[in-house]
Length: 281
Image 1 (cartoon, rainbow, N blue to C red):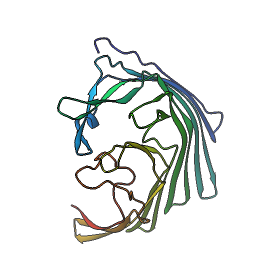
Image 2: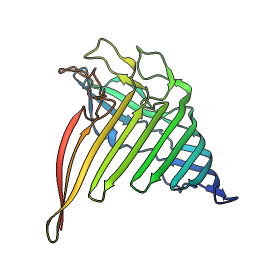
Image 3: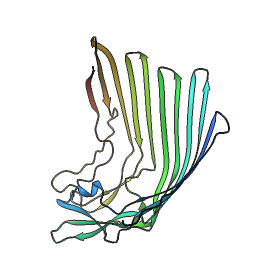
């Protein structure tokens, strides 16, 4: 890009009292026509490399976003509450899309990153924080959104064009809970919920390309930590926990030399037990 890009932003905040904050914002953005980290990693499908190249005429992807939100701060006795409600609407023009162009002279599958007509991402975000008493803090949030291309995009000759964005769930949420019953003892419960989403599955291990609607995932983890003094100036923290308690994990991975190496989704680890120690001097 030889010319500077102007991306204006505007934010307005209104606080009528100590309980409420209202915000409105308008922003623009862009992504330059360049290769991304994932483009530099060659995937394998059907035993053959899948190369991603840039369209010589690739233009910058531009976005325009509007959001409205309100914050509520409230306390009852020793209880503290904070609630955020936000609505957002984003339009994308010249959106980046991938299209399969066949095989090159070496027999490798070639995907071209080019510009689509556009896309719209809209939804509602909810976040809350609760402190019932000093030793306990709870944070949680959820997002409900819809992400679609203006015009259906084709990525494979054997799959019908699709308006939904890939690897973009309509719903997701998080939870963080910290409890300190004693000064030296801490319990931490954290988790994420990821709703169903569409992913590409290339032929090789399977007979032909297809779109897959993934299951929902609830990745919940628990950690217990205890601090103690080993020497006069050495603090040791011992910790123990379980990641992905419910073993919410992808169960249909490809196998063998013809697998689709990019067909990976969901939590990175199955149920995992861990122990550790941290020393502070």
